[in-house]
Image (spheres, rainbow, N blue to C red):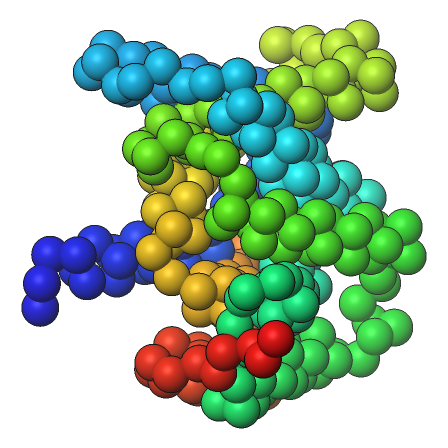
Length: 302
């Protein structure tokens, strides 16, 4: 196996596993930390560290056009995408259920990419994989009945907007003017997205409720976990695979993350895992196999 393929597999594994754990980490963090300011500061710290590291290495200074691209992408991915997730969990939507509802991202990404000029038609196998993955997610969501889930409608709406914003930002980033270095791009996007989230937190008046005496050790630990594993490692891996793979394959993380989130809920929070949960997880992994193991895609006819 060549080095490039090994790096791609490792990056996918990081996004699959680490981002699957961030839903529970976010829930722990916002127990005592202000949601939007927590997320904003998290991304600003992670982005500052990455960008500073690349500057010290002598990386070429980004252009104003590239900064403009990261302002837009950071806003879509982090304010729109991550901000919607944080807001939904703040309204009481469970972390595992949030991960399940975000699983519409691969559908949006495939459709947006298909409609883009010069992109690729997902093809029969990829389309079948997307449908199968969504079916597996639906099985997980519906296994206990919709009423038993106590889904907050506003939280649900924020997750729909969040998923679309993330998918659009991810698709647009593939053709945007960005630095050649994935790490430099990651740092810039994290910085810009973090500033967007900090501004949102200040507009919501969260600064008035910041009291260090109220912060729990679990929330603070989750905050630092999110900086290192969710942002620096996980987001860097995501930016890398966006450059190296197709949107349909990249979007499979949203199918795997729920299975990871459900497992962690069982292991760390005592949430039950039923036979239907196991069946749904098997369906989801089968869908990922369909999407990722078919090398041929059908070009769009002009």
